[in-house]
Image (cartoon, rainbow, N blue to C red; front, side, top):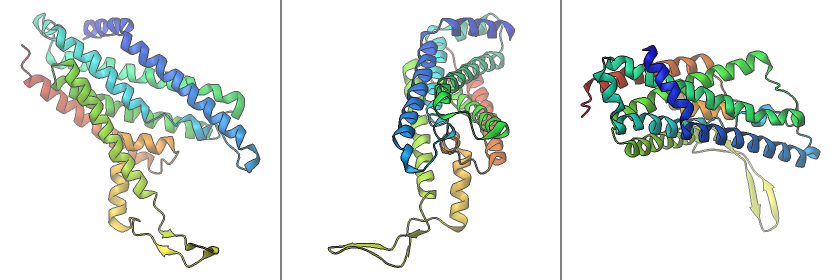
Length: 277
């Protein structure tokens, strides 16, 4: 296992996709934060006080995309070049090979997270430090690590299922985008107000009427189910983090741990059954 990890991390240090993703995340994070600072300066007279917290986690959903690209290409290269088969030939078990691949992919995801967080620090001179407090910030970072673990486990599983690197990359990216769209739709529906404004626009101007029920508002058991699904999806957690709306941190953490365990077990089963020609 140690030899496998050493070889994987040695290859990681030389991997161009990894360094490109790392640099791109840092640059995008810094650009996003500076754009937020510009927005805060432009609206300085509005009376609303912008804080670092409002922009710092905006790119949380993008972490999954970079993870999908890197994991599928990094692991897909091993399958395409026959490296995985060679590892098994020299005596490594399939479980050790799979867990070593998962470990290096998760470490890469954590480094992507670090680059994203480091890029956002450019906003401190303009907006000051976080207002979340130490506990709030630590909670956000912990939940980020957990949903990244779930996404990495899923992408590793997908990469294992497809020997062709290009196919694995396309499937991983499309899967991530599907999860993101699903989470976005759930979040948007849950954000619908219960009542709609009674403002009526006529030729004579606007008149105020009685508020009317919103037909798109979800209530009762359906709302609870949608909230649970949003917490269950790693992409849903990333959207909630971007908006600082992590209302159920314990449930979200447990959901991430459950998905991680399920994806690892499924990935190990898939890899053990896989015919490596």
